[in-house]
Image (cartoon, rainbow, N blue to C red; front, top):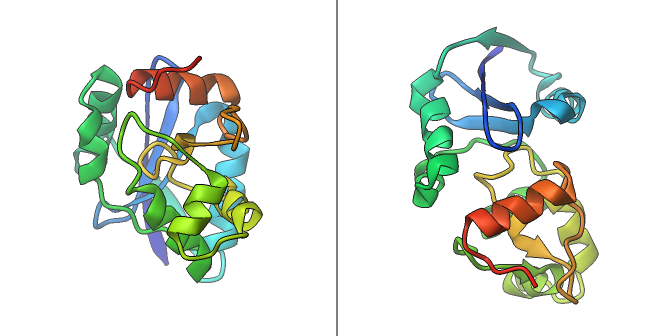
Length: 171
């Protein structure tokens, strides 16, 4: 049985769930407004082995570290360890997302090319949309080819806010 420690933090964009394992590796980070999506992803990835959610205050200091990100310490998210389940392709995409520097963006086709999979922009987009650890695995840094704010599970307004917060200038 997998024990998942959970907490919520207040952010300028609303309450945020922080869920980690007992080694304090993030398993999920999701907006409270979309907790049904988080629950669905947890069930997809961990139902077979079984899991239980346990309320914990600031597990491993993760809640404070995510609050620091919102307070302006943008590089703090680069120090947070994740342990995401998913297909090998999804995990490859999620790892590549973490290489996009703060304040920069990439479009889906560029990310596919970076992975050595030109033409796989839609598959990259699907993996991006299944990311269970938003913000830390910065799926918000991927935009449409023409610069549009496309597909962010937390909502386009949050995506725009996060990009501005990180110093990316939106036109």
